[in-house]
Length: 373
Ligand SMILES: Cc1cc2nc3c(=O)[nH]c(=O)nc-3n(C[C@H](O)[C@H](O)[C@H](O)COP(=O)(O)OP(=O)(O)OC[C@H]3O[C@@H](n4cnc5c(N)ncnc54)[C@H](O)[C@@H]3O)c2cc1C
Image (cartoon, rainbow, N blue to C red):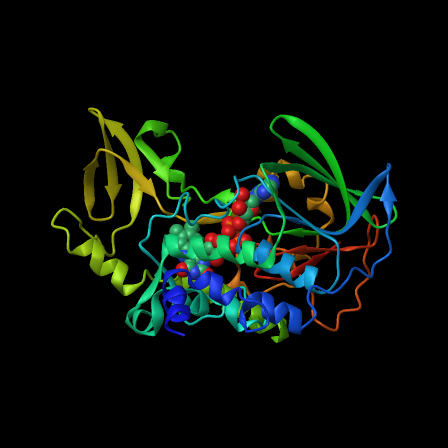
């Protein structure tokens, strides 16, 4: 017993992986997961057609792959990143901890031992869990790596999807770049799980236009139950988030402000940026500031034209602006250009090559499913 407990502390993953006694493998055996494939086999151009192709093997892509695989679907996940480096966590993100509370269930599809809580406590114990404030960023990446391994999810890494094109008969073709070699894959359903900037890109303010690239950079480095709300409230809530913006977590603010050379200029609008005497001059509503380098942490913009991969489907996707006109004082360009699921009871016709739903699990879609317009 003591030996087992020691093992739990040292490599808790092994213990929570233990079959039948609990853990992920045990849960899968008891729940008979994944279900055997039940969908009809379909071929196109001599190649198998997957039931679901997921572009993006980050948090959302993995969670969807787990859910669809458990339902007995044939799923293919493609990600351009190397294995274990999906999403922003170990690449561009710089914060010490997640802003999300540690207790959130995350991508665990109803299996308690797939939660971050179980993963953490199995390795470091209850006291360490109680003492933990927020989830360290790289530990979250480790947890996602383990999640993928524990569920045996297959992600085709190093696969960059460059084009998606509807074909007849309810099939979509994906053009994929694999180390410079172009391959084609087919699927019945397509999920875009391509992350925060995937329906556009960084939202660059006008004042950086014309400023030499060596002088500035964009941070580039970053919602449930929502579906049941009436349109007026869906819009109002998202619009409020856009206008108010999420404040930085308190501990992040304290971590920065304790440095003597960190200054927060509140009520200070940036009006223009120019280069002068080898430095950037930033004109603000409180006067000029000289900087060596400027980082514009101004978020992302939804602009389908920035993503060549989406050029064939962008004109076909129904957007919020096609169905919902907000009151003038709630106008919101980002929401207007975001994919729209439609009211749950919608009977609107799908004008579609293939007559299929495509799913967008991008931040701007806020887990909405987009239909052909
Ligand atoms: C600094 C920062 C802090 C954050 N903190 C939090 C937090 O505390 N809590 C929280 O819930 N969220 C946080 N987020 C948001 C976070 O990005 C998302 O919650 C999470 O990563 C979303 O997962 P995702 O799967 O939708 O996208 P991602 O994790 O971004 O994964 C998208 C994947 O798609 C792949 N991809 C994109 N285009 C293609 C293509 N054409 N072909 C193949 N692959 C492609 C990418 O390589 C990437 O791996 C933070 C984000 C940032 C940047």
